[in-house]
Length: 466
Image 1 (cartoon, one colour):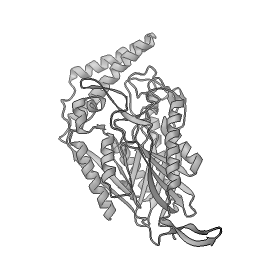
Image 2 (cartoon, rainbow, N blue to C red; image 1 turned 60 degrees about the horizontal axis):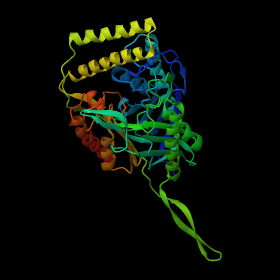
Image 3 (cartoon, rainbow, N blue to C red; image 1 turned 180 degrees about the vertical axis):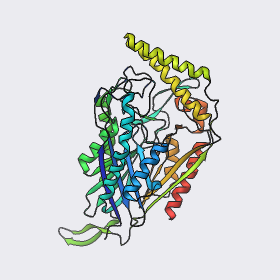
Image 4 (cartoon, one colour; image 1 turned 180 degrees about the horizontal axis):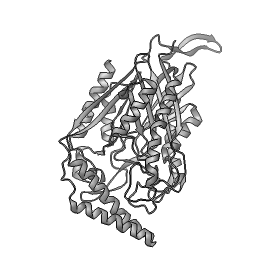
């Protein structure tokens, strides 16, 4: 049976220099990254059916490139591969142990951000070019498992103020999606893993550049199966891991291994060549023995399709920052810098850091929520045979991803945030009454989640009919 698609993979090291600004936590005391735990990677997959081509690149970054930077990278990839920009997906694993990608609320290490970010454009484009040049005959299929190392992270605590910690009674999505891509001989070219959990095990006291748990997922899968593994973060807006915030490298390794081992079990059960096991002959022994052999189908679905669409979502309006709020933030930054200069105790610095970063976040979301009458996002649906992937530039709650997967016409469907840019959290409507960090940080009105589900299903049906 001839292969119906072509696939290729590539990888590059995108680890930033030690000393770069490392500001992803309000409770942190340090400013610069002091060492590397695991290197950060960009892993790319190119797939073609001879009619359409797509490229998926996933990066160990807090957020994927956005706005003009995303457009620049996509155009650069198109120049190298001729794959249309809207057929290119760039996702982030959402590791909180990566570098700052924009100027933080402090100065140390900030001078290293712009050169690092500038270097990523060609690194990501080159990785995608490498994957595209490696295209070769392939087969693809998907499957699903379950892994209970994630949890809802919104624990009822004070009125309108849930605590951010594992909540086993809250809604969780333990689904673990796997797409396996083999060459003509059945050897793995790539394995794609989709799971929803914040990579926040290495939290505020961690001073290391790291992938957190996604790097261990990849290493586990690749070590047992071969080929390269892409980790596509799921709808993790309200999902963490059961060992969150421990700041222990060994906990990140443990969580990654559990996900990776389950992914390997699922992948081992996937037949990328469609067909079924049938009795093909009998042998007379102590009794008549029927011999089962795999009989491939005469035809299989190897179509590749991509649909990218911009949709408008209703905003949750808020007044823009006032001059007094802006001045207050500058005062908080100056106090933090002064305490560092004075060599103040760590807990004083931690508290001053918390106040400065919270004010920074508050003004950021105030600007976002005070602009325009809608929030535009790019919604992308990719079809790979009988599997499909949906990606949005937000941090969606798990309920959103589950609803899309349940209504999808495909046998295996991935739903991801952190894709093709970033806006902010996307809660479900009932969360607004509960309050909490994600609600404080969203620019979206409560009805936005339902619109995304409807549009996602419509696009999946469209690429299914194509």
